[in-house]
Amino acid sequence: MLVSGIKSRPVYPGLSPDPNARRNLIVCDRAGAEAVVELVARAGEDFVKRASVILVADDASSEEAAALQKKLDPVHVEVACSLDAAIAQLREILSGASMGLRLYAAGSEPLIGSVVQAGAENFIDPLSVRTEHRGSLMRRVQCVHCKGMTENVVTNPVKCAHCGLLLLVRDHYSRRLAAFQGVCINAEDPSDSPEPKVEFQ
Image 1 (cartoon, rainbow, N blue to C red):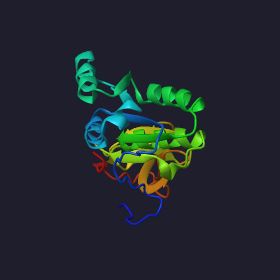
Image 2 (spheres, rainbow, N blue to C red):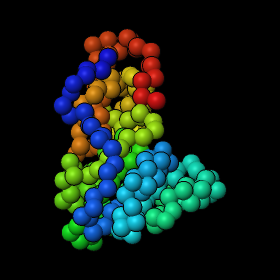
Image 3 (cartoon, helix red, strand yellow):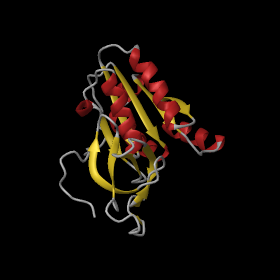
Image 4 (tube, rainbow, N blue to C red):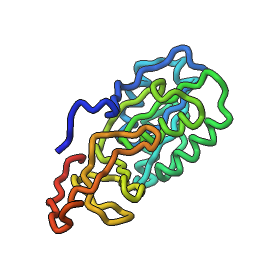
């Protein structure tokens, strides 16, 4: 169902350290933490001194979050209980940031998209954010009909969480919205309801 080769489809080249950055700010989820561990191992001591991590530990027990923090040592880590909380924290940091900050994101596409979006709101070029996809392929989908967002989408088609339309999840991505586009799949015949299939697990 998906069309390949769509130019708006994000590309995640992987994390690489910026040796010239005055500050390295990294946002990751639990799957993305592995990419950060690898980045820190490659980057060296100077990078670590100038780095801090916002770790999204949603659904993690306090023991699991503590284990992830220990794994990311010696980098300074702040734990956020949800992606929304992490992005709020990121926006606050970026609003007072000075020149020379390098922004990184590792984890799911909704996390990466949200980080890039917050960076763009604070005049950071989306293409300058260093990104690496890890973990689930779940998506954030915007219904083109009601403009509502449906989070953590793994099936195609998916029912819009706001207006209830059955949406075909397209590979068309909006950096501004940090979401993929969902279009009504059965507008001509609402009784035609294709069985959702897991495509983004």
